[in-house]
Length: 178
Figure 1 (spheres, rainbow, N blue to C red):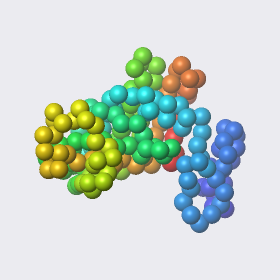
Figure 2 (cartoon, rainbow, N blue to C red):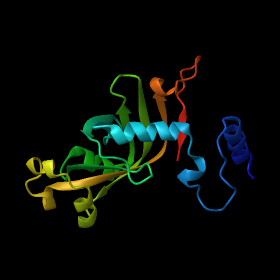
Figure 3 (cartoon, rainbow, N blue to C red):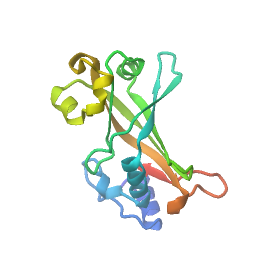
Figure 4 (cartoon, rainbow, N blue to C red):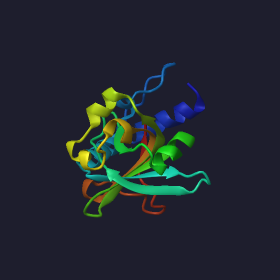
């Protein structure tokens, strides 16, 4: 076991988490899921809006509010619908690094996820995630509507009501690793 994996496994054990077994394959979420993951999932599943942050051509972060669809089937993948001609689509195509932010409505916390986004134009996926009220925004969905698929790599979560608080000295939030 590498020194880095040994260190992470030791931290997980100290925190009461189950460490992932040593294999050549990539870890699955079920091997590293913590209480912080459960709280983040609950916040994401109940959210109506999220903020997507992309990087423009100058590297300047651009934040936009989008409708939040529930995260995907036990994983933390996030799907969003948008206009095929929007600036965020061009930004993601140029640089897939992105951040998604959820705010707990009563102000008692947040979930921040950092990862990679991609543009999906596949008709099957577009139909799966289509929302009927989007017709007003996309009168020609075949041409105007695409999906953004966000896959998180890491993040953080704070939820005072659920007992997840930042470090008392540094305010560092509980981490999420995927």
